[in-house]
Amino acid sequence: MSKDVSQAYKDFPATERWTYMDVAARGLLPKAARDALVDHLDERLNAEVDKNGYFEMMERVRGRFAALINAATPDEIAFTKNVTEGIAAIAASIDWQSGDNVVICPEIEHPANVYAWLNLQRRGVEIRMVAPRAGTMPVEDMIARIDQRTRAVTCATVSFAPGFRTDLATLGAACRKRGAMLVVDAAQSIGVLEDDVQKLNIDAYACSTQKGLCGLYGMGLLYCRAECAEQLQPAYLSRFGVDLGDASEADLGSFEYRLAPGARRFDLGNYNFTAAASLDVSLEYLARYGKPAIESYVLGLSHSLARGLLELGLPVSGGAPGPHLAHIVTVGDMAAGGHDSTNDTRMQSLYEYISERQVKLSVRRGVLRFSLHLYNTAQDVERLLGLVKEWQASR
Image (cartoon, rainbow, N blue to C red):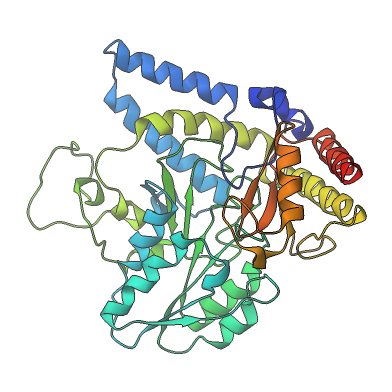
């Protein structure tokens, strides 16, 4: 039986101190994941390492993540350091020919999903840049730029600012029909939204663990659809990316090797066992609630927050809540620029006022960014709106 999402905050000690609305920067760690991490460190401290047990843990994490995104098999999952490495692994492994092209909307992408593609220009690849539409991913315009030389189309599942959802169902169907890979940066959706890589026709899906997965920095996961992965030649290859059956990790095998099946060919060397020890617990924890319940609960909070801010006269990006709005609510003008601050003195004043009162949020590209997860509550939303009223009254 699924747990009550509204009670999840009790498992996150940081909520006792903060009104935490910053999962788009980094998520909170549940106490159980912290305890697992301490147990792992104690094993190292006391020389009680069971490396075979660590490998079993990695396969458990691989399976949990495959289930979370509805991958067809755990073989479609590889381990990386972060989103950037996952995207770069795909971009560098396609058999590009001069004159091939990639379609991207760079203005609302994180740099993690830009430079890996720009780097391909040295190989004669054309980067087809499309402008956003009112802060949203211009799906129809991107589809219009696809032709017979388009090898990949790339986008974020949810932009990190202004935080709008991409219509992946439409884009994925078009890419699959035209034979172009759909490569997505899932940093802002994983663990919060109900991403289904099969339903959405996603070919490659890169994420990191420190945001919605409630894990640590320094670890990422990469999904690559088996049919696509089998056509890719990894730019880097290690023993873990080679199929030697049940042989030891240190066995060399013959010099005529076969790549590991699916995305496993992208695995490189020893894994981040420390981050995995925590992630194993966090993934199991999220699974207790279920993806539909988490998304429904969190979107209820974010829509309530957006409506409340609009009623107070604040410039909420995208206006009234609709299909474009996920768990990220942004306020202000992106033209104001700034990564951790904004040139809009009014919004900067609001940011400072609520930050000084134990609210965690970020400023990205000139807008105040509030981002929610399962540990947020209706009381968090009420408190934030109350602080905004106080700020307005003080001016």
